[in-house]
Length: 304
Image 1: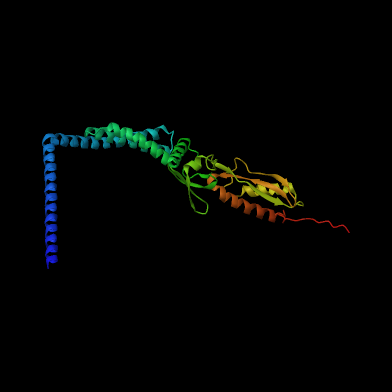
Image 2: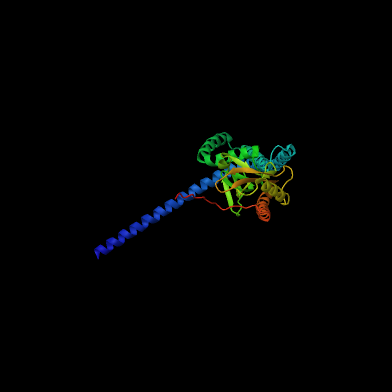
């Protein structure tokens, strides 16, 4: 029993101590809350009106600045289109850069009106820009290459091109990547850094394209007759241009055939239609006029 009484006394003492501790902590928190509230009330009494006026003034500047930025960007866009020196990509890039620069200036101005010391912020932007530039150098390389594509315009939407070894029709060009659609309807996204860093072949830029086809005829066939028949067949192919005139000539004397170069011209958009129609027209014309297209053959002489 004495041990039980001792335990009860210890438990009562612990409970009393815990209660006193909680009470002291609660009182301290209340005291700190009152001090904070008193500081807030004092600050509002001394500087509240001034701060409210600053907020109102900053809000007015922000609204007016947003309207002015829209007007500036619209004016820049009209000026770019009026000059006719840039394409859609360059116009969009210049307008985006103008908008972002104006917004940075506006936000720094608004923070200054709120009483914020913008000096460290501006300095911090420089350091942050350096760090981000190092971290995103690949993206910045694509951005710089996109700017070069926008300025030099080696291709535009709808052109048929070979870019970075990939062939297709240009569907989209932005500041980071160029999007092609291949002949079998695949979407290919090429980073601008790769596009600008490799040779670019634009089949649509000059309007007309020459169709190059090689067809072999038998050595026993009359070459002059075959050339005449081919030229007559080309005259009936839809899409073949008269100027420049189609040309047919002997390309080489090969093991099993005399190879002819068939070279009609077409508009860029008609290239494949003219190519296919020419192959068919030449094949039919040669068959109808007795000009043979040989299979590969090898003559073997055996000594007895």
